Image (cartoon, rainbow, N blue to C red):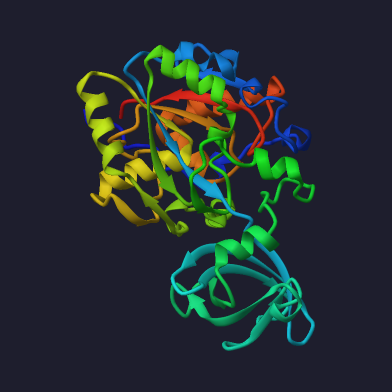
Length: 353
């Protein structure tokens, strides 16, 4: 008798009802004071995040995404006076950037935009060079009048996710950033890592848990909705990643000693599995992880709770099993866990295919 065919999932399978009041609008008072839903075994346990060291073993390897969120949201106007907003997604050589643009009518190629008053008034100018990555791309290729990172730091706003209702504050500038953020380039935080503070990192080190980093510059596409019921028809957004040689070696040593590779966040999973699948230590990835995916590197995962019908719901379902994940979400909602970027976390173990 032949084995039954694997289930074909559709977009509706990843939907769930989330009470709006469970969407966290502000971070917990202390980073490691968030709740942690321990779903790493069939027995679900409600914990506090600072209990994590006791759930890992000496010789395990925690892998973090060390990307740094930049103040990528900047306001300005066209020569006609029409208001616009840029969300700078990527910095290119020669003071050029790739950005999302919110404006009633898109400017023509060669059109100049005056950001924060323009260069003549203490701001800067942006000239439209075309679409990106090609003439049909959804993003815009712009030439800025000065160095992009300096301009963002001076004029930009923290690009809070669309489900956070307030404008960015000084608290957001600090808390929508990991304590070990190093490489500027993200427009969204690797949110599972927001729960780690220096005291917790010290406890993990004392327990013998190793630590390594990758970089994936999280793009605004991470919030892009899936619009096709047939999930195979969805086109994933493009993000730049790097797996340093030291991290590659740390992973090999962890596997050799029988330790577990613990990814902190779905961005770390996407980075490590892109490297394993495509054999490239750096570059762009559009990896789309759905149930049935063959994981090569990651054994356990620390992650926040994700949006209904999102690609990240598909990723965690692929990792820990669809039925298990949906059960964890039902438990989290019933027990008033806080959701999304500033919300609580869960710990998962990879199911064997």
